[in-house]
Image (cartoon, rainbow, N blue to C red):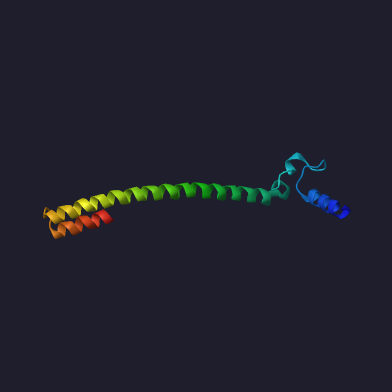
Length: 102
């Protein structure tokens, strides 16, 4: 039991807890490591927000592309209907079909 208490004490004293010998600005995990710790914190923050903003942008792009595909499918159906009725010829049908797909 004493060994367990000693192990717990050793683990707690190695964590970056505020102790009287340390200055208040050294309590933070990254601050105790000097310039490199702060640089790491800034890079991690930029990476985090980049992932968040990038994820939102990808989701928005996916939603917009799905909506565009539905509109394109409806326009292609109308184009095929006009071609079937004989309102447009083959060359015009192929040209407009190519325009819809691009």
